[in-house]
Length: 165
Image (tube, rainbow, N blue to C red; front, side, top):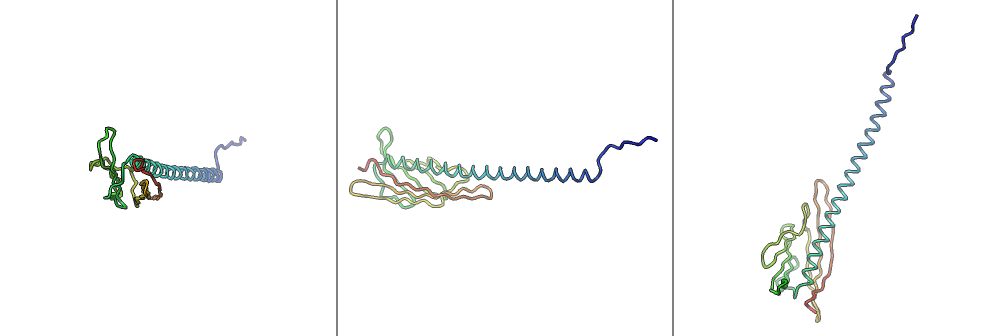
């Protein structure tokens, strides 16, 4: 009598393989979720810091090139008396308008200095005047809101007007 050689898997073997496959799949999916979350957090931090640094640099450059701080400046609006490359007088304004950091040149809106999903939550300009020079102290707080994540970062600078000394 011939014995039949049965080939195949038993139900126990299938359950063991299925359990191992499930555990590995969960591990891979969780790793993928952690990597995506880390990428999103890093991207959010990069956008926030990049936009803050670029905005502060633009404000600082305009302050350095200005002749004086206009008397109409307030803590939330900076008005600078400056001139363009040809020597023509012009007025430059930085204003927080509904969370946007807007730049005006001669009362013409040049645009928002911040990127998408970014808003100004606090913007303070303090004028510093001495007998020899003028300076402006800047405190700006930016907020990034993307999806369910929010991050806030503070930026500070003090800039002396070159034309004032």
